[in-house]
Length: 266
Ligand code: AMP
Ligand code: MG
Image (cartoon, rainbow, N blue to C red; front, side, top):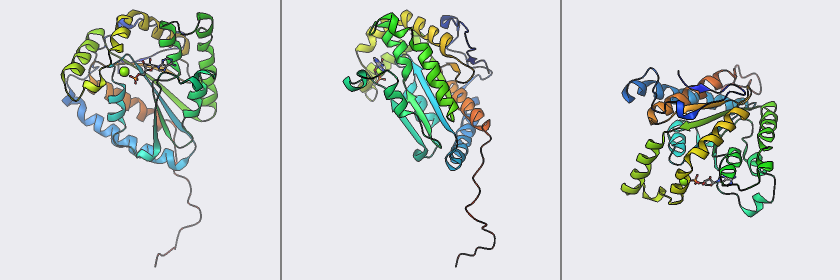
């Protein structure tokens, strides 16, 4: 699948990556069966993850506004047991959060063993929006790439598997989605005039994303760039990577508490 798994230190140019790409698939219809299969498989794997209670899975989602973070979560997680999943959306930090180091609020939300955790935005905002808007001096945000790598290494060494997905949409696609938010009554609540200001800073954001991928895609916590103009392809690819990753953990149901042979329930 022509999805980019960024190699450590790799420089990517986002404007050279086709957000319309759909790999070998030509239509939503063609991909439908596979997506359904992946979602069902994910439910099975999550059940073992929970039962085995040995690993955690952390999924980090980043994208520009209207990039599809919410829709991805809704679709991809539609089959799993809600008890085993926790979604955390990171907004502008509160005064209490700002009074701590930038990873304080993040660390608290990391999934415990047996759980899938999804970050809708993440610690990467602290080298994205923060960098683009000069919310802290460069001397501060520049150190954060190393901090992030060390933090993620700690998590991985503690049994957390990390997948980081950038939902890559084009600027034109963002325009279409923002227009849909203006036009369609059930989407209007999502329209935020502040997003227009962020859109003007598109190029600065792309640069900030590119640095984050170059500095923070590691062999233990890779960044994937997902062509995301087509929602069905985005969902297919992400579900596929999650399934493959969970399969790779070779999880087992735990042994029963005692020898259950011969037990008869009256
Ligand atoms: P939304 O995801 O649309 O609900 O918007 C959340 C907003 O919070 C976005 O504009 C983010 O850029 C912003 N945000 C998230 N994390 C941070 C952060 N660490 N510093 C500043 N703004 C942030
Ligand atoms: Mg928003």
